[in-house]
Amino acid sequence: MSGRSRAAVLLAAVVTIGAALVPSAHASPKAPDTAVLDGGRLQQTKARLDRGDPQLRRELRTLTARADTWLNQGPWTVVDKPKPAPGGDVHDYLSQAPYWWPTTTPTADNPWGCPYVQRDGQRNPEVDSGTDRQDVEKVFDSTYDLSLAWYYTGRRVYAEKAAQVLRTWFLDPATRMNPNLNHAQFIPCKYDGRAIGIIDFSQSYTSVLDAQALLATGAPGWSAKDRAAMGKWNADFLGWLKNSAFGKDEGAAANNHGTFYDMQLAALAYATGDRALARKTVLDARARRIDPQIAADGSQPQELARTRSWHYSTFDLVAYTRLAAIGRHVGVNLWAYHGPDGQGVLKAVDFLLPTATGSATWPYPELEFHRYAASDVVHAAADAGDKAAQRAVAKLEAPPGGDLWELRPAAEQLDSIAG
Image (cartoon, rainbow, N blue to C red):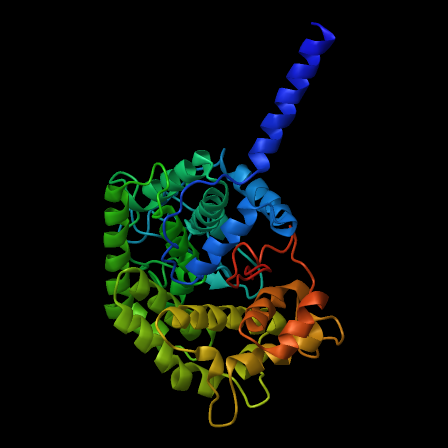
């Protein structure tokens, strides 16, 4: 090969690699109608990326690296667990209480090894291999990463993979999940399911709703038929969440379970067109959640009582800040609300700032402290106009893998929820 030919090949390779990192100017005729994320802001961010914003380009490289890892994984299905949920329907989602263990060797007549006994704090490994919990988390994370990566780059491979993951888990008759959580966090031979298992979905499924809204702006491989079928699944799941005994019990919870229930209910209502229910849910959260759950000083007493009090204080605020984001779409400014003792979401975030910025240690019990767990909720408060949070942003600890706030400005739980 001549020197000129080698140079041409090298130049072509450089152009190809560079092109993979440059966002395309694929048409996005309207802002995505996202339930939690601000669709208009996403549209503006994409325009900045298309103009070559260097900070956003760095974040995009991190996001696309994450999306790339999903391309050769999955799709996952609810029907491939080794043992079906109680009742025998493999299409029913199944997850298991983590601290309960079998007392006998499983047999054909006793496939779970019942009875089960509790070993508090000791995680039963079958929770992570014998149920649907691990796979559904991959469904949540992959569709969000892939849909965002497609929206910002226009690379069809991301959209097509996200669509495949969604169709396999939720839509295809042979592999779909039934739209209920009747067997979430069950205890073999004791409880077929528990209301608290709803948090398996309420913690992350709202990101999947936003992924669907992103794909609905024109993603290849996600058809009108897919959108309609997914809308039907969401409506059926919303109906179960509102009307089932488990849904009503979870809605009555007085800690982070109740906050996350409201957040999921409002997002599903918004995504399925029931904007009145979404608005009512956010409005009701003021007296129903903020007043009893946040103290005058901004602390969250029920979360401080946990052995992982930092984790649960940030965890509950993920739900509050995402609920406030939904409120923005339906004309409710949850950030501005102050209860009878002055309590509010902003005050709850401010309570965390000394520790979030590294200027003070956390004085409450915490078995596995990660300062970065608060970073997203501080970002959210800063965007909402909180001056103290705005000053704190520069001092936040970035989560593992980097800070992607500008590309997906809605709080996520950044530390582990296991345990």
